[in-house]
Length: 194
Image (cartoon, rainbow, N blue to C red; front, side, top):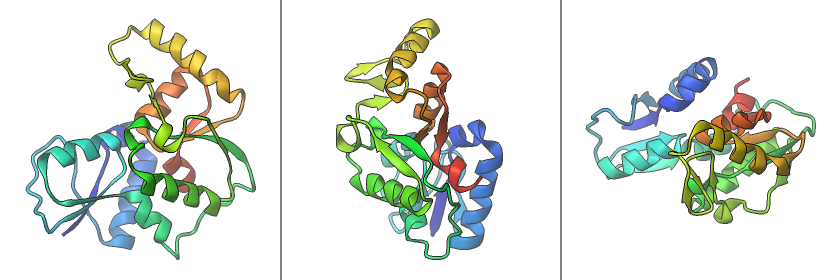
């Protein structure tokens, strides 16, 4: 069976967009919504699970031997998708540390952004060199236990590299925590399913 792993974090952050995505995958790809990755599931090795969230992927890898694929791969290959046109608008792209070993995601995300006519600015530590996942992880240090003031100070310092240019992420935590610095950040699905 083919499933779509809905992301609780994404659903909480962007409930309207999440609902659009869920309806889309059911209608257009015939995927079954599988619900929260932390609840018990009985996936088999024959199953295929499309996911959007790095945390969901990590959880699923620990509980199943089903095939796991990023949702961005199926979306990038969709020849009939009505891509919105952002008319060359410029964004920085923030890759997530948790995806640095997933070059297929880097490729699919950049292909999707190109299809939406987005001018992408790359940061120095991108793709397999990414060392950032919001306040979860940065440059070898686990940051999640920092107090809120330290997190905000850190995020403002980190986000200085972006100036006034908005940022696209494909990670819930990256988007959430970049916004701690009052920076304009969008999850890629917010731009795709606006």
